Length: 437
Image (tube, rainbow, N blue to C red; front, side, top):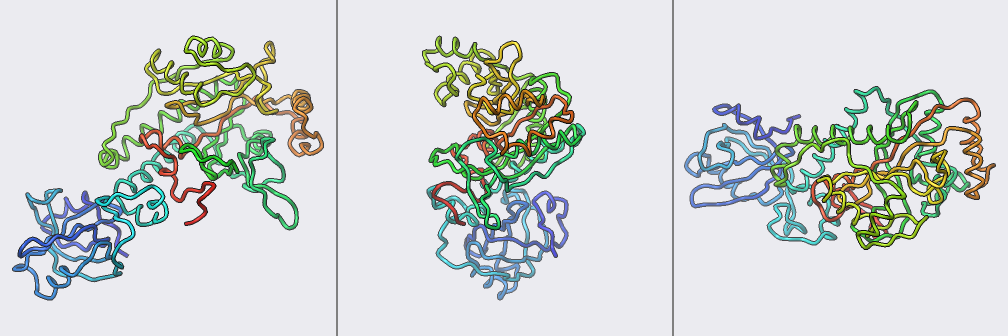
């Protein structure tokens, strides 16, 4: 098995013979020389085959190559002023591994433009485009950075269930499945299971997995299937501890991307910077006054809508220079039963949304750990106590103050990279219209 050599690998092998595999990104015949741009996961390398320097049969084979053929080249790495990387490979052998049909339904070079629907329909070809591949290498680095932060901070990764027996958030936007003849659901967010893990004595955990939401949304911000990273931490003072955790996770993740993905960021023509912490915080009920001054009306005890959220984001940016901020102390009437209320202001909850560039990326805060309060809030919300006993009963036996959040990975990747549609940050996105590939 030949590991993919990158341009950086080849730079140190000038004058030596190498073997390299990849896809034909492009073929150019200029007089008595054929140039092949060979692409693999490590980058793009130029292969130069002068008619006078290679065997006639090899020259003929190389001349017959087509875009996206899979080949193996053996040859010597030589310096070249004309090559983009300052070196190229002069081949001595070529083996055609797999031939591509023509015409291609999508141009991985990006020379011929294609609509988003076409690019998603032919996703495997689109992923061969270096700029598209860069997105997912960066997304991988984001997750690496987040996990590195949690692991160094003493968190354990927990694997919570994707199939649940009841609706976790009390809503109807769930995918129903047949579970051995019984009704079950794909999880929206295994929030309650993370809390039960805390109740089990693990005081620092994080969950990394897939969530589903059966929401008929056709916006560039929504997916029917998305990934989140979701920590839960015990023995907190209040919801501000979860805010400090989240902002440090984000800063660590961006720092890791800057270190690990310099080439990919350059390819996308992006410059990142580590955000300053702590992030600004905007609280209810002050939110109403700010929005009034901005000419945006938000009725009380109503969840914040997109125009109001964007107006707040613009306000925070102008006031602090930050694209990041926390929206805290939502009205308790619009928050789930498991969120802790402010004891001396019970009309408000210790509920926190994280907003980046006007888009909500996470929701969380402090959970209610007192059994009698949980029971009271379940009754107030009109839920069945019996159906939630599996969750509430452990809270009778001593659970510490705790909190956390669920952070959207595709949304963060898309907005960090300045992309207009979250689907471009999902490998094979699922939405109300798209179930394949």
